[in-house]
Image (cartoon, rainbow, N blue to C red; front, side):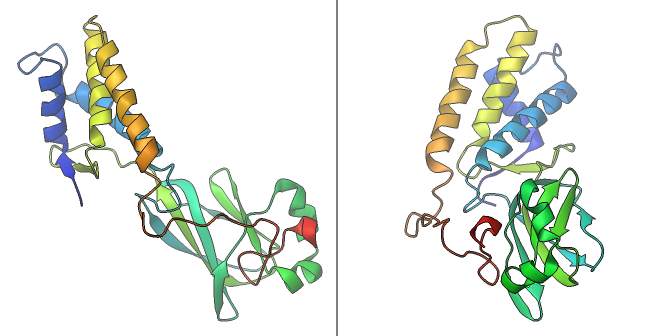
Length: 227
């Protein structure tokens, strides 16, 4: 971890910035809740750089012919990509649009060009056509784990956790009926910094612009509108 800080550290930082080191007006449990809310917002902001993500998890999905939908992981937040291994060949799957579901039911046509596609549906992932047995791997951004114990850690990578600290201090001051505007302004300053840097994690090899008119993904899955 590049810059991990414990919940205990974060609470102490918030109290110091709010000038409430010895105050009992706001309890540690309240600050913990404020911090978790702010850290979840920061986590989502860092997640904007999904091409080279800060947070990544994966899980296999055993897809069975005749079954279209499968539950997402309990900590699922956003898809980063879905791979599939079909007949010994692994490749990336493309998401289908709702209007394409009917066409995907024509499995004889689709299997010639693109074996299967996926779509997130509520708390499930759906694969169409549901006529193939294979193994999929879902790569995703997990949701922000709540900090509960004093030793629980959060990685701010490059000091980005200070945005959540500023947001927490602003809430603490607002409860005290003090002016939180300075800390809200500092929070937004850090977010602007994050927006300018977070998606550029590999300066030597920036991502290429995708050509949406050409075949892409598993076995060259053309968009159904291009077939």
